[in-house]
Image (cartoon, one colour):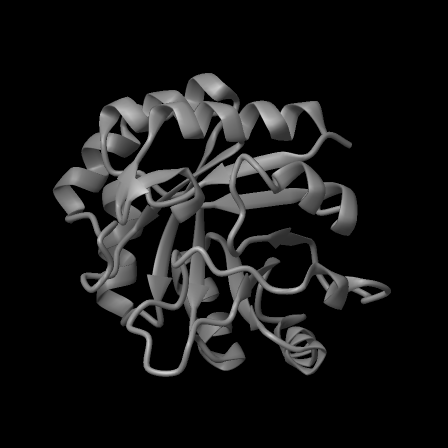
Length: 212
C-alpha cells in the first residue's frame, strides 16, 4: 500500500492548494485558540469548502467540549476528528457524539508511553504517535520535536496508525523506511515560521512521501 500524508495546520487558500495539488490524502485544520494555527469557524468553513471529496478533512482539537466539537464538525463538514490530551473515555464519548472517524494522539518519549495505546482500542479508529512536548508547553504538538523512531520497533499497533512529530522534507523518507508508517503527518516541518505554512516545503514533503 502506498504511504499517505496529512498536511496539518493549514490556514490559507494557497497552502491548502499546495497540499491538494501535491497529493495529500488528509488535510488538518486546528481549532485550539493558543495555537498559531488556530482557525475561526468561518475561516475553517471557507477553507474546507475548497477540499475535494477524495481528500479527508480532519479537525484537530485539544480535549474539546461537546459544543465546540459539534460546531466545528458542522462548519467544516469534517470527515475525522483528531484529539490530543484526551482520555480514552472522553475520546469514546466524542467519537459517538461526532459520528466521525476519530484519531487519538499518543504522546511518545519513551517505550513506556506506547503502553497508553491499548487503552484506546475500543475508543478510537486510529492512533497518531506524536512526540511528547516539554512539561509546561502550551501546545501538545506542532513544535518540531521528534521521538526516537526505534521505540516503535516490534510494537504491535492495536489500531491503524500514523506517525507525527518533527517530520520534514529532509527526514520523512527515512522515517517511513524506519517505521513502515502507513500515514505520515506534518505541521511545523513545512513552515517558514510558527503557523506560516510554506508552499515549497509542502510540495517537497509530499514528493518525498510519494517516492517512498
